[in-house]
Length: 99
Ligand SMILES: [Zn+2]
Ligand SMILES: [Zn+2]
Image (cartoon, rainbow, N blue to C red; front, side, top):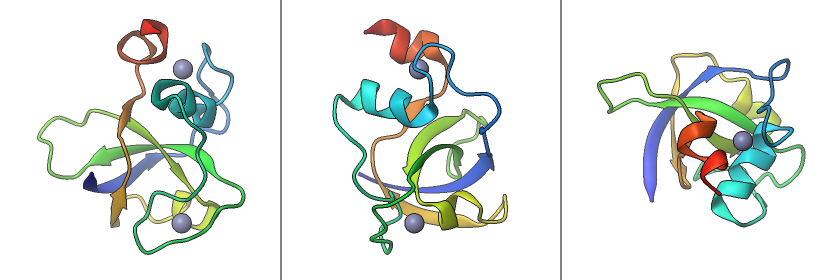
């Protein structure tokens, strides 16, 4: 599924308290490993991290986690990118704590 998202914030200092890291949070909720950057035109498989993003077509500013490479994790905050992945809620009560 394709979405247009922009980076919300880098969450290096505050990882998911339930999963250890935001990447593990995404992997746990998807029940699979993150193998590639979510950006459609990017084939990076190294140094992936779980990054907070906003779906730019949603009216609320709900925050989601997706796997991104180091380059795309550090895009300017309002720059949008097309990604092909499942957006996972960053709220543990709506995601990892339900498993
Ligand atoms: Zn989690
Ligand atoms: Zn990338």
